[in-house]
Length: 391
Ligand code: PLP
Image (tube, rainbow, N blue to C red; front, side):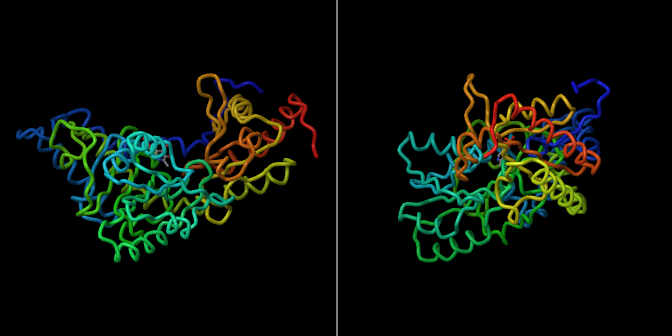
């Protein structure tokens, strides 16, 4: 069936972005309307903005269990990740092969300037082994950056265990190894107490947690030395200069405040995720779940279907009113398979046939049933076109 205007739209791309919660929007509105002052201004317009920023900072600090002064608002999580990698001044960085491009591309940039980077492999579930981090440490290592949960396959990394190992190792070292985690995909679902995790730096983004786009946070533990990467003002302790977007910061604060409320939806999300996984694996021959089943975000599903192209599946689902995504990115006319799926050991063909469905707090059972109904037929049709033969 081709997509028609009256067709019910189903959104299963919550890892890409989420719908702004109404309460978040309400919290932002005053700062886009009457209270539009520059938070650095002395007059009351400005001071209203300053008070709002302070409030949001306290909410985020409460969520991370840190001090408000350790919370730096940034223009995005990409920016926060860049600030860590480029600002750390580390001669040697340890990261993983499955990080977000915000980490990988900034590491590559640093390499071009003479720094050394170790990109740790992952096992077939997508897990970084704590022992592999330990073995990669050198005298000149200054930073370890491992994501909390992967955006493509939802694998949850052993951050607390890596933090404990580094704490132990740091006791013996003169130059401390800082520990950063990109927690963007984890915030809705996992405990983000920075003390418990043992991290010095943590990145989060508002638009993955029902907040606005274009606003993120970098937690910087007191005493952690990172250099600014942009210059031009005193805002955010000079680490992220530029006039603050009060509305976005308020939106982020409200979204983080609501995370606790949304946690109640997580059991339902997990139930629907498992229904989707079990039914698809049963109904579609030669289908495969990518990533770990146990150490997986409750909202992430990632399949590979032999003989069916990821883009073609996404387009066919889109025509049914279902929004999903694929690991392969179409760049400059050439299809490059996902670096994450390749690191998990998938072949180029398997990686090309991947489909990611990410659930959210508004996902219903009826929507999941619709996917279970239409996907087997779509895969069958695409396999027929590609001339795929079962083994
Ligand atoms: N890190 C991870 C793990 C992500 O999933 C994303 C977004 O896709 C980002 C960083 C970048 O976030 P932002 O869109 O706020 O720059």
